[in-house]
Length: 302
Image (cartoon, rainbow, N blue to C red; front, top):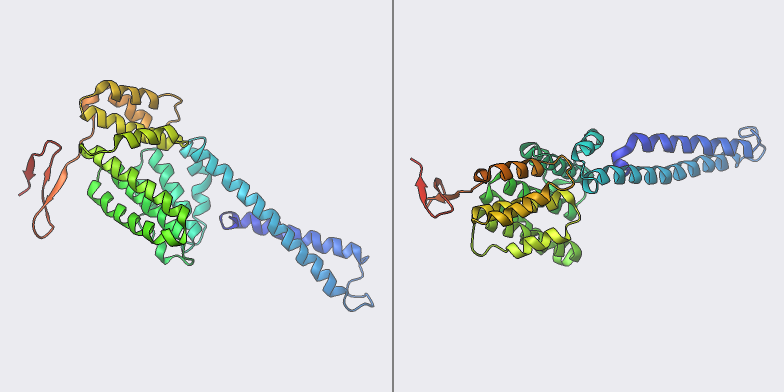
């Protein structure tokens, strides 16, 4: 993860080179060029090279620790604002054709999502094309496409989310032979997204039990509260306010300043403000001509 903290890494490696050269200088009692043994310069260079190698190892350890610290802000402490302050400027210095840049933009997108800035979250990843990265990174592709599907659901564009899910299914098929663990994770994410869409549309086949199970196993506070909010809205639309209230109150426990908490407060006070979705109606040419609401009524747009 040195690429995220290259300046720090270069400074540590330079320090390693200086220390290696200094130790070599003392070892040869300062007689480098004047030593009768003509191989002295070669051995002194090895001291410097060894210092660089050790410096790079130390830099790698320091960079990993710094990255883990900022990731902890986002995924453990649920402090997206703190994460953005610490990391956004760091990722801006990473070359845009590296997988590490795509990964960093995914984290930035997720942090903005947690704050309720869905458009900012989308802007962070909308132009990413993982297939054009310098090194082929299946995991990076999966992260980006999965986040795009997630954001389309949150933005209310369920049709666009469906297209992203199709891309996820393709990635899942590709990863079966190349990365079995990733394939299994993608299979789970696809099931979650499809259940979320079905719940949002109010379909009778919505796998609500699976979403409720997701909450039980979610270690990520941001993710858990998002699923709780979507289930609360599902139950409000289904005319089950008590079940909805249970989830809304759970969201407000252990507050972190997330958008889900503000939304939960709003729905507790004004349950009539629950979101509803309209399914697009298209003509034979695939053009959108109207919407179908959750009661099955079609509104044709002239």
